[in-house]
Amino acid sequence: MAREQFGICAEPSLHGYYLLFNALEDKDNYLRQALTRLPALFAHYADQFSESNLTGVVGIGANYWDEFYPQARPKQLKPFVAMQNEDRVAPSVSYDLYIEIRSDRGDVNHIVSSKVCELLADSVELVEQVRAFRYLDGRDLTGFVDGTENPQGRHRREVALISDEEDQAFAGGSYLHIQRYRHNLPLWNSLEEKEQEDVFGRTKVDNIEYESEAKPLTSHIKRTNLKDDDGKSIEIVRQSMPYGDMKLQGLFFVAYCRSPEPFELMLHSMIHGEGPHFDHMLKYTQAETGAAFFVPSLNLLESLAE
Image (tube, rainbow, N blue to C red; front, side):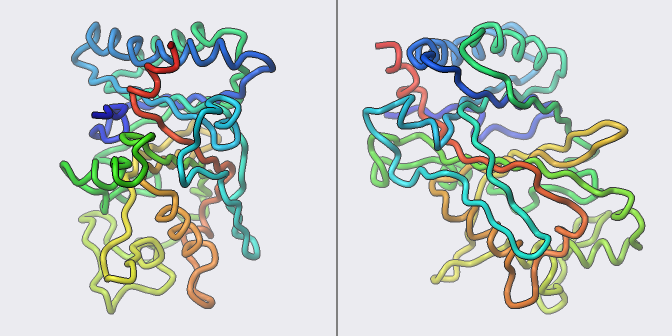
């Protein structure tokens, strides 16, 4: 039975460190061997700092997959689909490797991130690194709770992980999409609280969702809480975290799912909307990156050493 990478469905953490790399020429064989060692590296530090609840995730870029693992390709894996409508943009950026390190200790994340970079050494270029953190009681820097609709308990696995029936060769894996959003907090904070609540479709302090008839068609909840043809909720597992300093602030958006389609439907609904009704949250935040990855099972990672 395929074993998933534990960070996919892990509970929220206090600190996150996201590393994005591009592979250097003729380093594929080295990288395959190095990546097989990462789960053991994560396990070692998770044991050494057991109170930190450390988890890690290794993802392979959609554009890099065929070069990295030419034997087979996940059935639905494809590059990030860039979207644009007027001034609303979801760009696509190509990264080869994604490493996610989360725990309840920022110093442990730093140690493990350093060890990852030492292991990958001169086989990669570190293109982007984002240090993220839990804000208040799981809120985005806008002040609203993030991920309210996230699946809970065992249902997280059902949403995030590919089953044997769907794609046996890649069971236990997950399709990953990331975007780094940059917020315009001065503009956002110029709104009255009720105006902010209307943008989201729920109350700010108590996190109570508006009644259906009261939700503006332009609210974030209306644009992302979608139903399929059978009336069932379309779901993803979010592992997003805020990031920032005194100059730049935003959200590092992370979504896992057994299929790329739910994420693409939600993003399309936000940007293109329904007629003129797009997600008005996009007036106050802008995606500066976007990329698609596949997160293989631990079994597949281990097989790379053979």
